[in-house]
Image (cartoon, rainbow, N blue to C red; front, top):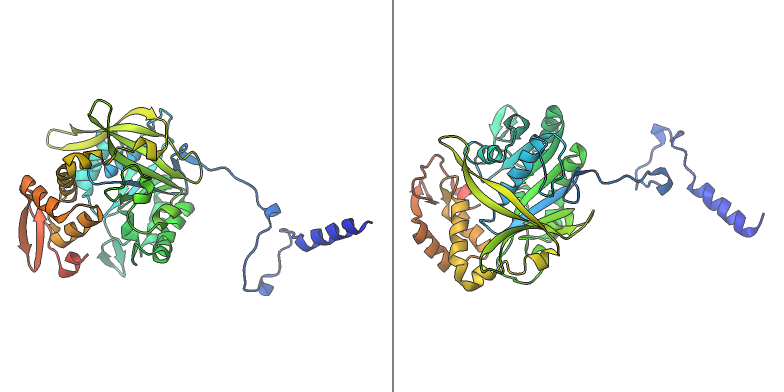
Length: 379
């Protein structure tokens, strides 16, 4: 046997491991767990919507206020619950959806939007709270992942999970990389354990026209780094001086990272008393997100900042009164100036009223149905 053969034989023996004869449980030692590549079997990505929504993975839908991010997510849920067609015409597997929203009411906003898109209400479950030690509490994405996974297991065949906004899962500073990665890991684990596509909804900052829109996702870069696919929703200028909305794929670690679709938001009557928004899909588009959305800030540069602020206020206050400090904080993150916010409030006739010690903002005709604490105002 040559010297080279002897060395190769020694290496083979050093790497040899028989899964049929594992070490005795009593002799297992603490330390790093290594799995040799020869013991692993490569597996493909399982797609809910090929190239866009992967089972067992975390995704983001990001956009500035008023672009219909939540409506897009509800359209995805409707597609899954009726085994409908995705924007590219391919069919979806039939499954269930689980939705948590910290901003929109499930009865007057989310469910009507799903119905407007033809979804099956029987296949949608909304998280409205949790129970700890027999006491009902508000659902906390940072604490209740184990309970949520148990509930999803009971439902069965859950193909889509939506968390809106995803920043609610971060208990630490959402602008710090380490804290954000730590707090998002339970969501990553939830997606992997349930084999559902998990979508988190987040905001883009204003400005940065012509740049990579993915770089404008608010908060730590960990949001974008951990997500396997990032979709960006934006309004852009057309050649005919009109505007259109585009959903572009800004990043993907597991498939193509370009392309997009035109989409339109419209209001329809779900029944005689309920009106809801829905998404209708337009043409498929080619190009990178940066190319497709290069004019997404044109409306602001041309004096449309007020329109953006009005859309922002309409979206934030759609569910009822909101603490003014919370509105101001979100407006600042969205890149809306205080002066523009004042003009938008005047244009929409937004009312300010005091609920206990907390000042709240509300749209005309919205009846207050909740009471805020000082802690909520400080959020």
